[in-house]
Figure 1 (spheres, one colour):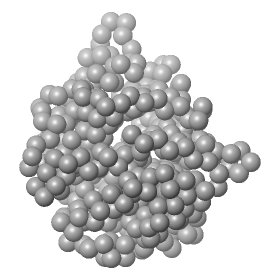
Figure 2 (cartoon, rainbow, N blue to C red; figure 1 turned 60 degrees about the vertical axis):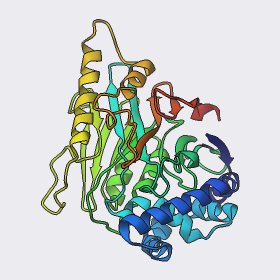
Figure 3 (cartoon, rainbow, N blue to C red; figure 1 turned 90 degrees about the vertical axis):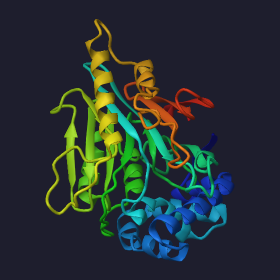
Figure 4 (cartoon, rainbow, N blue to C red; figure 1 turned 60 degrees about the horizontal axis):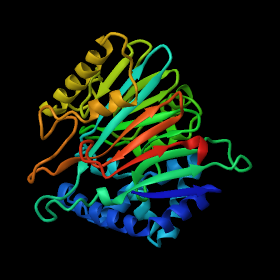
Length: 364
């Protein structure tokens, strides 16, 4: 996996990202162009027009995010609107994305962890077959903050090239995971999901992150798991509202996959809940309960890595293998120790690794 180390102003951070990841950004643009055409009937000009609808909000409330995306566009020598579209990909698809991730959280008296597998479509139907298009476009993005320029914490995240917010941890011990939710509806006056992930990583605490997301709202359906040393909060978002559950009120362990687990109001369309998504939540919850019941045994990095390797209900279990007709596969896994402010990312399926990487935002 390409590792990119950035610092400076938002534009300079983006410029370095764009220059280092130019080839991967172009490959990602080609992938999503084909995906949106196939799944949503949208050509790339229609895709970028949809993304532009977010600009009034972003320019007014999140200009630093706009500047970073402009830097990426200039660094990669691609149009700004294309980078904007990458960062709004969930909203453009409006429930058509097929990410199939499983996320976990566990808070004990002295430790706080979050973890997840990131599963994604690696090909588009039979035309690309098993070519691992998106696996090749993953990057490890390290953003070092200059205290003379910013009071925001440094960040380490695994993301897709050109996307400024994804799954990771910051130097304040705030971690974030995500799960796609297939529910239609988008509100262009609210924050796109991937940019909401970046807002979390720019926060100095779980409480600050939640306040920011409550104020901004999230434009389309997504699940975001926000945690720090004090515990974790599960946020189910639709284009209408956020519904929250946390470890303080709902027990020390949380698991989530790709459907709503909580009660939403009548404005949210009914969704078809995939059976395998239900089974992944049940299986992850059961595996954590088994570990919790083990005498004298508490969670550690190895605990979560073992859970994320689980292949029950294969090929569509927690650790996905996928099939030729549905090439949805686990591309990486991550476990975050929020007290240590460190994480371990494993590239590839958890039982077939190509790399194991340390994320340490305090020592970039």
